[in-house]
Image (cartoon, rainbow, N blue to C red; front, side):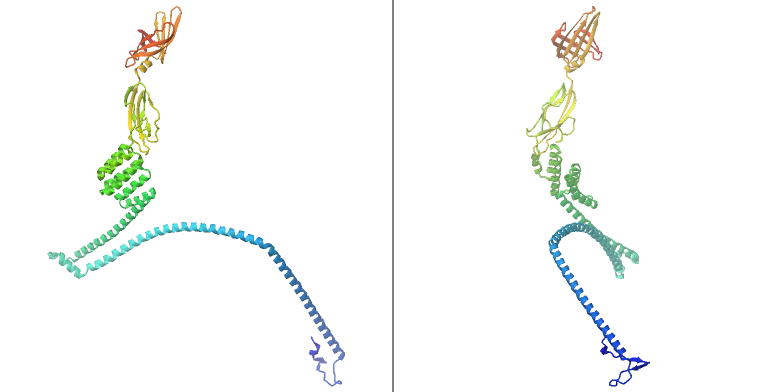
Length: 509
């Protein structure tokens, strides 16, 4: 503090004394003490000012240091930014690309989800609308019935209506004049019948609309080859009207499209029973014939259907159409019948460019059956051969059939009867023949122990039909005493004995 600006009151002996100007002789405190205090105060003020000045200097130095630090930090930041800028830019580009890719993926997922959600919402909305519409229509119909019933009852119970009704209905029957309750009840019943007729008409209209919609939908699905869905649409019509000929016809075409030609045939026939319109009948027959062509039913059955279509519709175009499917039938070189001995059957093509398919077990041949390439050997027994010829258009001819009964030949019967070893004894002599498929061995032993044998080949030169009596011609003989001709008699069969050149022989296993 500045001592010049202060004047303090000092207390001396409990009194306050103030120096009096111009009066040096006045009573005053100790001047030296006052001067010392003043000097002390001045020193304190100077120290204070020096401390303040030093503090200001320190503050300025701190500010300078802070400023330098800020400048250094800014310079470092600028240099760092300059170095990091390209890296950051590249990172930003990669990040942007990654974000864009994620956004595209997310957008695609959103679009896909939105499409699925939209389809589901449309389906649920349509179902809900149909349900609510049906409920609303029923509710409105009931409300309308209630409203019309009340109005009708109100009108029918009006006195003038009752009187006019009495006058009109019971004009000649006065005994009924006072039976108003009966009249009222009759009037109400009549009203209910009128309202019921209206409601029935409305429901019938609604049913007809549903049938028309399902039929149109089914036909559209048929053109799109969606046969399973088309079948469901026509079946829905059938639940509303089981006698609907268009729905039955639609199911026939759907079955044909699915390759179920048996069911298709059933529904085509059912449709034809229910229609009389000639144009509609032609449509059914055209689809029916196309289905049977795809079923490859065979020429005879197909032509019968075409003849029937021409007769029912009066359209001779069906007869002319036969030419599209005519394929020449094959033939057998051996007429069916009974034969003796092994036979060979050749199947001859009607057109050299066609193919033949056959079976030998009596089943109906198809293009999945064996294709004919060589003659068919027939061993003894019974066999039925069936064959078809398939033209370039893939349509089969009518089926040819041959039943063959093959019995063993007389020669084979005789061969079977003599096959094996046969022996004969006469005193001390022993004779033996052995026959096997054209080969013969002859041997004999004398009682003295000597023996002879010879071999050769034989051929049947004559035989009766039963193969029991025949003649063998022997050749290529080697050895001694084998006759050149052997006369064989196997009768009677079953006794294990035969006669060779009139000598009897027993079978020797």
